[in-house]
Every structure is written in structure tokens, then in C-alpha cells.
Length: 177
Image (cartoon, rainbow, N blue to C red):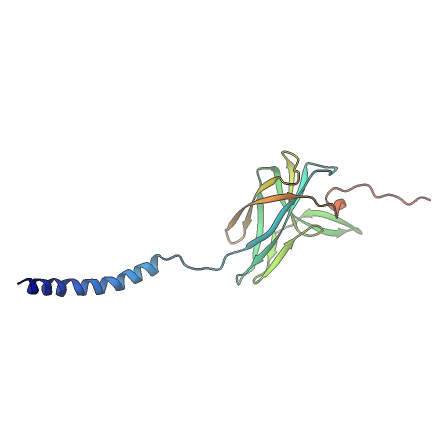
């Protein structure tokens, strides 16, 4: 009698177990996170110190942006609680002089390539700073991209003295006559 009862239970349970194995696998596959290409990778991000600068109300953030995807993505804006205003800027030649200006349309990160935000080039400008920034400080920065993604970053503040005149212009000395 016990053998017949065991066989009957197996006859009912075995098809359920086999069918639920298939369902569990497909359910697990459906619920597994899909692997997708990240939108833009941010590397080597940092902010220039205001220590020693003539104008301590503004500075710039620099970084490398890599787009592993198949379509161009633009950095469209940025925000930071340490600045009253944050803009995307570029350096360009106007009337024989390098000038900094807001970059219309954002900063393009080509498909399968990268964009470098660097001194004397494209950068994130932090203006109306709420406090001076010294080396070792950290600056929260949120980047917003054209594909709807955002990156919340914490950038270290570092010394940088080269290209001083691009971000804190000084009078150009005139030659003696």
C-alpha cells in the first residue's frame, strides 16, 4: 500500500516539478537585470582650487567622458550645491584672444568615443561659489545627459596653476616704449 501511495504521489508531483523547473528558469530569466551598455562613463573628475586665485567666486571642473554606445550623447547641464550657477563652457578664439563662453547645445560625447573636459577646452564652470575651495575639499556635482541619465559625483579639489589666465584673467603687460 505504501508503495502504491508513493508511486501515485510521484506520478502527480513529477510532472509539476518538471514543469515548474522550466517556469522557474524562464521566470528567473525574465526577472534578471538586463545587461546594457552604460550611457556615459566619467573618469578622472576634479575641481580646480580657488586658493591663490584672484577671483575666488568661480572655478572649473574637468573630467573624461566616454560613450561606449552607438549614438552620440550630450552633456546638457550640471548642478552643484556649492555654486549659485553652473554652466558648460568652452574656450574659443575671438578677436585674437582666447575667451571663455557658455557652450551652446551642450558638450557632445561621440558614439564609441570620448570627450575630455580640460583646461583651455570644454569644462564645467562653477560660479557664484558659496565658499572658497581648497585642495582636499570635495565638491558634489550632478551631470545631466541628453539620454535622460544623470551622474551624481563627488569631485576632489586639486591645485592647478597652469593656464591661470584663462580662468582668472589678469592685465596683459604692455611692452616698454
